[in-house]
Figure 1 (cartoon, rainbow, N blue to C red):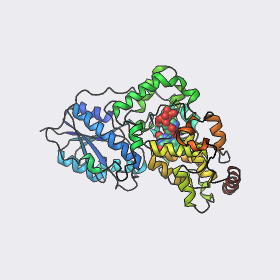
Figure 2 (tube, rainbow, N blue to C red; figure 1 turned 90 degrees about the vertical axis):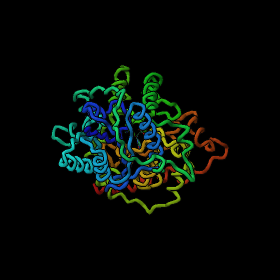
Figure 3 (cartoon, helix red, strand yellow; figure 1 turned 180 degrees about the horizontal axis):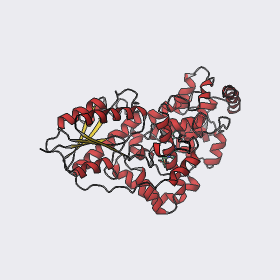
Figure 4 (tube, rainbow, N blue to C red; figure 1 turned 45 degrees about the vertical axis):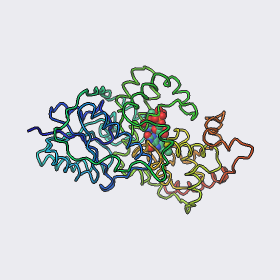
Length: 449
Ligand code: FAD
């Protein structure tokens, strides 16, 4: 009797460079792909709306690609520790393979399952696939995690180079007796009433083939401008790989090796280094989305929330051109350029004096690349409470940022054109006064330090 292998797909929705899938193929038994929509395990953060939209497209693509090669994707919903065990029983599976996750609650689920399944005589193995360097391998001489990016990235680069990507399998032997699967449509990951995803559909194509195409296009056509123009939101100079990396439609190893092969990708690859740094930070501080990394920021005197100010920021009606443009780009496309993410985040925290956690939650809900590490890490970076963070007192002036990085107004014209009219909307706060108020509030943190 064959004892099928289950490949449990998570944030690695791809066939190429997928070590868990490779291990299953090497085991030689029929293969069942499994995806679990887990919104119930303690501590696992439910996906935001834009992320659910992306996941739907990416799963549809993965299912199709598995089917073309002879395999199948089984969809199940519920707490992963129960659902995976049930799938193992239903399939009479002899092995389960997965690629590692690095968030605290996810690791707890995975460790528990590994123990239970092994006790039951099932072979279980996990693999490194989503990060270039395993978090426990990059530590200071004293064995502690790095708190500053430059030495962190230097240490990474002194380690053996990331392994070469694995080729995409041509055939995947599916199980003869498939087990029950939910229908993707029944998960209702797509928005309806209202269907707000029109802009997402126009902007993105989820799935591994589109991700690989984008990587190639970027390296062939755009990499030459990257170092010079990556800060200009209208330049289209960045890779747009963030949702693809978030969902694992391409692996960092593929990006790394194809980037290195161009011989001119140093600046671009160091951005992958920031992704590593954010994930290593999350590994060591699993509460990154809720707790200040620098605990003296707990003393920050956030004033009572003005819901109308938060709503104006969310909708892009602050009366500040670059902020409004960015927030609307986000709302329409599920994406915002990095420079503008920094400016909009700084405006929320330092001009509106709204807790960074509320901004982080809005981004979590609206970004297609909403990432459990990158998002809170960068919010804390802007707030000044994070690892290697921008000092709090360095407060972006959004108008000067617009002059510097969108000098011809192309970006603002695209997303918030009324700001370039004769009658622009008035700002909801005075930039200078709010800056002074932020610095005064920060004094409390300094005293607590
Ligand atoms: P590129 O410039 O082409 O960079 C290549 C890759 O490097 C990116 O795809 C991303 O994986 C990684 N990267 C680049 N910059 C950073 C960074 N600062 N930190 C960590 N990784 C980085 N990125 C996310 O992927 N998900 C998020 O939820 C997220 N939230 C953010 C919130 C705020 C407030 C800020 C300031 C930044 C956030 N970022 C986030 C980081 C960054 O803005 C995006 O990764 C980048 O804009 C994605 O565009 P790109 O793929 O074209 O980037």
